[in-house]
Image (cartoon, rainbow, N blue to C red; front, side, top):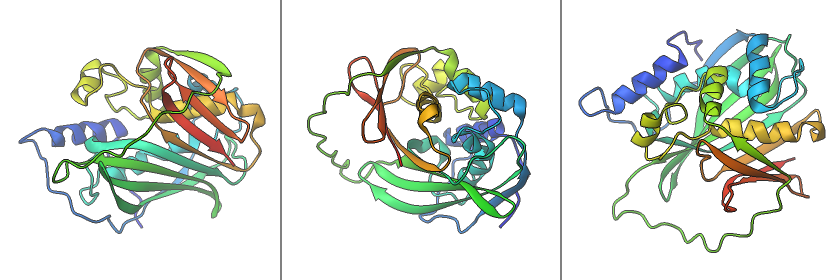
Length: 279
């Protein structure tokens, strides 16, 4: 276990992007996950950042941390893990396809957290490989929060790889609310979260990776849905989401609350952006 001190999240993204360009530092990746766990101790809440985050994501301004905010606090640590030379999939090839958060108890803004992160469960996928990046937040040695982000590393396989038959798409559930997602959401969330991936903030960056326009961060979409559920959430719970189609900026999305504890986000044509469940 090590306590890393290194470049900012923005610098790590720039390094990863440069390394993806031909002739500028690309390297062969190993087939296995690194046997390493990174740690950061004594991480405090920046109350101004928390207030800005609440506003961008639609939460009320309170001293209780939204379930998604510890992900922001620990994100630089997880990013260092994913940009390490030993990590088997380059950052520029990763697609965030799922996230599961477990809140053990409420966390307040005056608490100091210790974070650890590691990767596990590298596994094949019909479009490449998937990996789970685990981030754990603790207070005084007791785990209070856990996040598991699932990433897909897209890879070309011999023979092209057959796509699974997705069948007919079910009808979208009736909308509980509709939200207009403006272009500024990408840059605003990047500023408050430190996740400055250019696919969210730059037209050129988005087009370099196959998107017509910048797309909203998946964790913003999850946070926005949880903000809509804020009055319904207990003190301890788990919330899992699968990220489907990206939310292009700008766009209008429909939020639906389902009777089984689930929730969903769809576009104006009924195509799914996100499917979630609170337990």
